[in-house]
Image 1: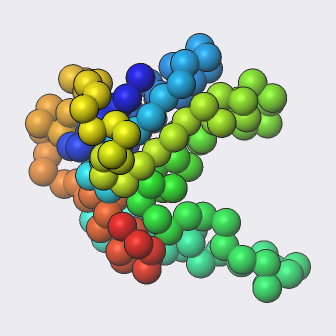
Image 2 (image 1 turned 120 degrees about the vertical axis):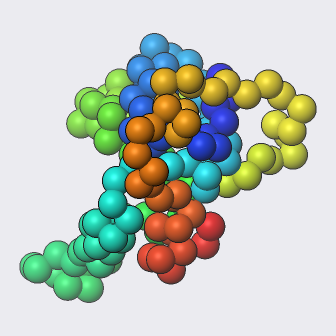
Length: 141
């Protein structure tokens, strides 16, 4: 299954993709930089900056483990929906691929869009794109 992330809500597509991965399906997400997170813009800037700058108190040289690139932010969100401490969750996570834009080998394929996850269904206009968070954190789009 190839999912188009353009104007799709992150949490909603992450939950559907996680279910498909646990069923054994191979899932590819394209246009990860265009995925939308609903809510207050400043709140998410503060939240993601805090996660990205987190250091371990016991070993301050141990780096941040939260991603800064937009495709990896989406991938990490799907990981949060999987049972990561079990082997089936880790196996499912390996079947997920996330791309920024559309790669050449997937250019002519048909993409799946989830109607429930579309940004046009929102009542509010408070949302932020993953590429904005990524560029705020200093990552590449």
